[in-house]
Length: 223
Length: 223
DNA sequence: TCCTTAGGCTTACGATGTAAGTACTGTACA
DNA sequence: TGTACAGTACTTACATCGTAAGCCTAAGGA
Image (tube, rainbow over all chains, first blue to last red; front, side):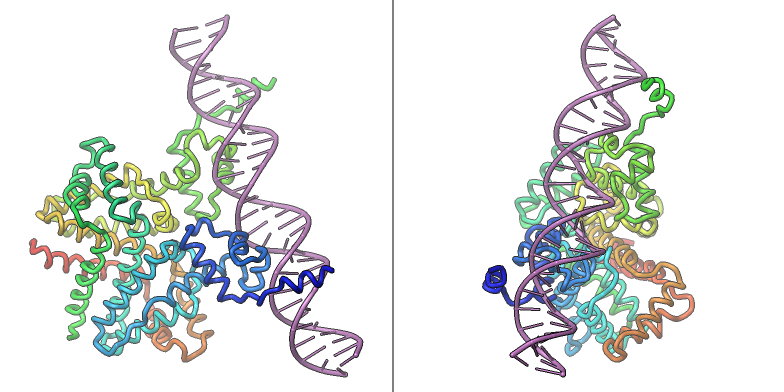
């Protein structure tokens, strides 16, 4: 009796990839705080402990999730020169990190990169070297660009608003409810800039990116 | 009997500040993962639930800790011009975030800034405005600089090595144990740059910072 | 004097990660 | 054909976590 019943219900076995993808989906819709082994198992129709056949533990799961995000970032193709390649790759990276807001918070705690992450970094370095950057200059460019991308993603993720209406709501609350004169420049920025129609913080990304890319071009002396 | 015993043992009551400082100290030495209400209570010689007389919950505790870190960042003084002021403030911010490696990871999840945080941001904006930056240009400068600072701190915090010896160890492990030809540029960078004597990733900070500051100066047309 | 309040303490609950052990299945080999 | 084994899932159990609820005592104002 028990064997027959079990046999009837049996599905195709899970694999690591399905587990990671389900974890990413769960974190996307409910936040990283809602991602527990039990809930992830539930989403996959499986008990929590069964997941341990495919990931070594929660740490390994998180590492794998970060690697999934990196795998979504387009690799730079050096054909059109390093500058457009880096530009497009930065935009793709920000988009991936904005799609998965939890990812940037994981990067601080997780420090064992997966294959997609390594491939990504290797491709970026290769693109810069191929364009004639010295080793030192490559390291500098890599450091500024990645710091900027991650930092921007971090700020975007920690903004208390995503949509334009939320922005207005938050900025108004802020301007209205604080001790009026305590933070004059902050309130002036809120009123005179953030609350202007059409404002969206994400627009800042490419402005700063181009500033940095131009500066790198000048510093490298590379056309 | 009980009253006498309690009276004899009684200490000066806690306050929010002591709780926050102890939490920061605990996180500094054992990592943010080791910070639980029970362990924090233990460090203060108090039961976990007593902490709830001084913080509203763990979220409030974390918010307060982030604010403590911001309070350690030196405010910009505009006397010598915006550029040295921004430079020194960026260096001070990175130092604070490096002293408290857990802080950058909290910024993603916590989104209600404390008074020190607001004061800091207000001072930065004020410095730029006083130097003649337009509102838009102020917003741009603010966004690039903070993104860079936070992103750099994030990368620094997620590096698997802090000391020079650890760097060598990790880089050697990395170069030696990976499928040799899979990530050629990454291994080349490790061997030809990271493993060179005197290398320290933190040195990159000021290089990128000056790149950005120069670019801002040019963009703003401000001497 | 009594009453309020502040700041501790105890107990208890549900959720979490995971160690340990069990049961079933399909495959490899005798 | 039978048998051993490896893979995958399940069950149970435990320590730890945040925190709700309620109690006790000392200090201070009425």
